[in-house]
Length: 432
Ligand SMILES: *Cc1c(COP(=O)(O)O)cnc(C)c1O
Image (tube, rainbow, N blue to C red; front, side):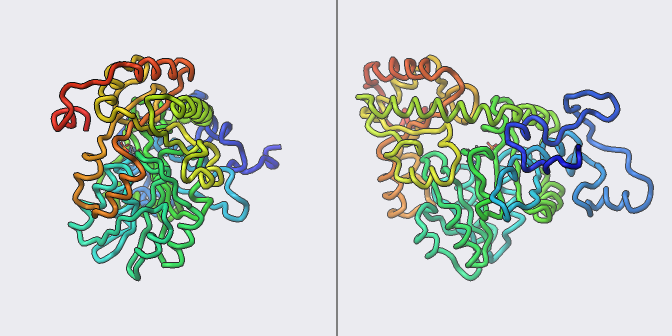
C-alpha cells in the first residue's frame, strides 16, 4: 500500500501542515516533534560522514552545531518546503530547499548577501517592508551594490531598470503596507530574459495563498513571525528555493553571518503551521467582511483590499492568489486627527505594529512621514506612492475574531469625535 502513496507534495496543504516533516519519534514513539535545545552534537566517527557533518557537503548532513542545523529546525524547514512546493502546476514541480533564519530580515539579508556582490545590480520594489527597503536604499549601496527602486507592479518600469549587470529582481507582493500586487509570471519572464533571478517576499500571502516558485520565481522569502507562526510569540524567517542555492545560503550566511533560528522558536512556529491553512481561510473571510463594511462607512474615504473590485490589481490578485489575504488599508476622512481618535477608541483591535496574528491589529502611517521623509526615493516616485495611498494609511491586520465583533468595534471607534488637539510633528512622533 505504502508504495502507492502519492509523493508528499501531491497532498493538500491541510494535510501537509499537520504531517510534513514530522514522524513519530524513533526512540519514544512521541507523536509531537521533540524540542532539541542542544547546541552541539556527538560527531560521527572519522570518515565520510564526519566530513559531511563538518563541511555540509550533502543536502542533509549529520548535525554538528545548531547555528548550521538542528533536528527541530530541520523538521520546520521540511514542513515549510512541503507547503511551498505543494500543488504547483505539473511540469514545474521541483524539489524545494528551505533554510530557516532568526527573523524575516535575517532571511532577506542572507538571500541578498549570498546572491549579490560589489558591482552587481539589483532591481527592487520601491515600496516594501520598511526594513527591506531601507536595506536596499541605505546599506547595499555602501557595499558597492547598485540598486534601482521601482514600482514592480509596473512592468515597463521594471523592464527599463534592468541592466546587463542586473543579478536579481526582488519583489514583495502583496506589498507592505500599500497592498500593490506584482505580476509574478511576467516578472519571472522579464528577470530571466535579462539573465537575472527573481526573488519574492511572499510574507503577506504565505504558501497557501500564493506560490511564487510555481510561477517561475527562483527564491521565496517569508517572515515566519507573521502568518506562518500566527500566534505573535516567535520571530523567524525562511528562504526557499532550489536545493543547491539554499544550501549555499546556509553555508555562507548561517555559518558566517550567524542569523540562526532558535530551536524553541522553530518548535513554536512548526506548531503554528499546523493550523496555517485553516487560519488563512478565516483571515481572508474576516478581511473581506471588514473591507466591505469600511467601504460603505461615512467616515472612510477609501479602502484598499485586493478582494474588492475597486482594487486596481483585483483581477491580477484573483488570477495569482488563492485568497486575498488578511491585510487591508483604509483612509479616514478626518486625516491624522481621526486616526488618533480611532487608535484611542478601539477595544478589540490593538494599536500595534506587526501583523498576521490571531489578534486584530491597527497601525497608522502618516503619508508625510512614510513617503516624503525618505532619502532614497525621487519626487516622481513619492508623488506616485502618494497618489495610491492618499493622506494617511491605516493598516489593518484582520485577526481570527468574529467578524461581526470586529465590525462593531471599528464602527464605535470611527463614530468618536475627531481628535482636535496636538496634531503635528509631536503627534507624528507618537504615531510614526
Ligand atoms: C515583517 C516583515 C518582514 C520582516 O520580518 P521580521 O520577522 O520582523 O524580521 C519582511 N517582509 C515583510 C513583508 C514583512 O511583513
